[in-house]
Length: 220
Length: 220
DNA sequence: GCGAGATCAGGAGAAGTTCCCAGCGCAAGT
DNA sequence: ACTTGCGCTGGGAACTTCTCCTGATCTCGC
Image (cartoon, rainbow over all chains, first blue to last red; front, side, top):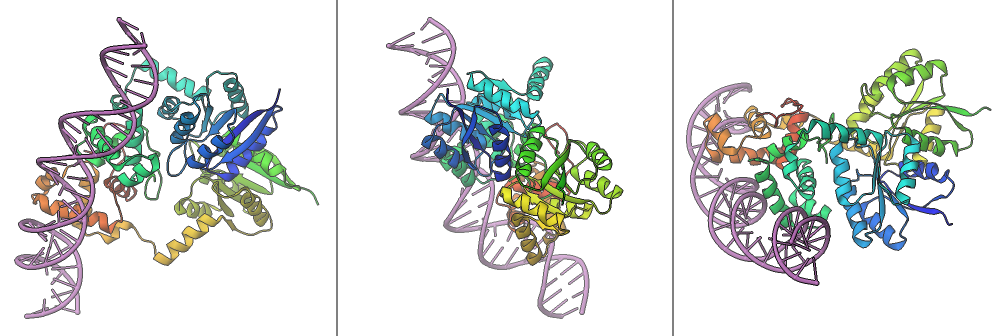
């Protein structure tokens, strides 16, 4: 049996290099490609479909979610593992909705990454312990955020709007028409009872959709 | 000559493992310790002072800055390299103030990390290209709080806008015409180089104009 | 006094918003 | 398989808002 091929998607070159070393120490695992953006990931997968795609969610421009969708669009059977620092449950849920087969946070021990890759390669779903714990808490407490009124795409666009991107930039990042973004923008405000874009930012912050920054121009 | 010893500080086990592999591929470099928190880093350094400490800024609880200060407190000659995903200049400045000898972002190529370690080991200071660029821009433009460009009335209106009030509500609250508020709104965005209302919120937050709230729909 | 700058507001055209609608794809039910 | 429903995607038209220009006060400092 030949090696399990893996495509790494992360915008940090050093991080990619680190994972590559880590993964290739495992016998039977081989990293056959790297990509540093959504577009590059898509092209790399088309050129050489790997058995497993390991993708980071936080990438400049369009998000890792978009990369997941793009890859799933060309190959419904693509097995994608999200490997990110985001420990928020909402990120994990969105990743699965986008078509991910697994979600492992960088807080997990190295073995968890390897194990998740193996699980996914075998056709299963993998979730790291911390996320599993959050899911349990969420289920038991039954708390709901205002975002539940929104579809996954709406949530994603809300995040981009709240982060300060213009309509054009969002349309470009998601490869949609400006008109569609405008319609989403309008619909999201209606669903959240937000009369103002500033209100949208607060809702997004409350929902944990945005990372707070100590300084700078806010999430961009 | 014996190997250069390195202490890795990062709260993500997988990330540490990756760096370790990456660094140890270089002849003459040896990772002699790992730590996943400020406290652990401090203890590890006391037990076995490494030639170089590589530390991530973003750690839960107390920040990586605190780890830098603690280590410098026990050994003024400690050589500390910050290696983080934060590309904001303010982070870098704070790191150097805390006593770091270098600052490399994870956006840098892997060679940059190795090179920075070598530079610091030789007694120098190291900064990755992106941060160096930001410093240059900052110096040339002469940095100041963005709010300094605004008059008191503009600041007041900015605060109300960012808190989520509509134009009508603000006009009513200040006994001004809606038209005036619109004009201020427009002028404020221009002065702050904000293309979006969401951007305005972030500027206001950064300037300390608004208090953050854990939950509840934001300042209203 | 008198210019500089902040405050306040109107108008016209550009730009964005809102609402309505329609096609598409997917999943679930019959 | 067919239908039904829902989420995603965007066009059109009317409406509202924004932007830029302009001008009016008012205060402050010289």
